[in-house]
Image 1 (cartoon, rainbow, N blue to C red):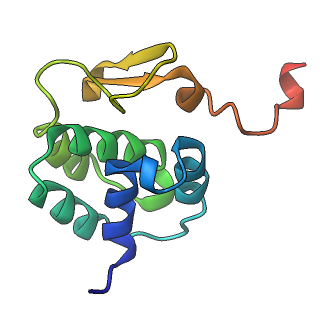
Image 2: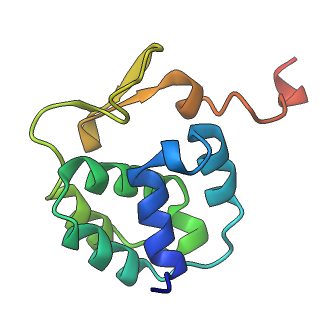
Length: 123
C-alpha cells in the first residue's frame, strides 16, 4: 500500500518512536513545503484518537502561516482533542509545558526547539 505526505505527517506524529524520535520528526516536518491540510485532517480524524488529533493540531498550528491552515480547519481537530491534559508521548520523562488549547503536555525541548541553532540576537 502506498502512502501520501498527508498520511505520513499524521503517522509520524502518532508514532514518533518509529520515525527517529521527536527531534527527527520535528526537523522533518519543518522541511515540508506544501501539505494538503484537508487530507491530513481527514486521515487524522479517521483514526479516532484524540491525542493524535491534538498533536496534529498543535503541529499544524506551529506552521499555520506556511501551510495556510485556517482556524476552521484547526477547529475540526480541536473539537476532537482530549478532555483532560495528556502527554504528547507516554514515555515523556522530561519537564513538560501544558498547551491548554490542545490539552497536550509537550516537553520543553519540543516547545523550545532545543536542536535549532541559537539566535545570536539573544546573546
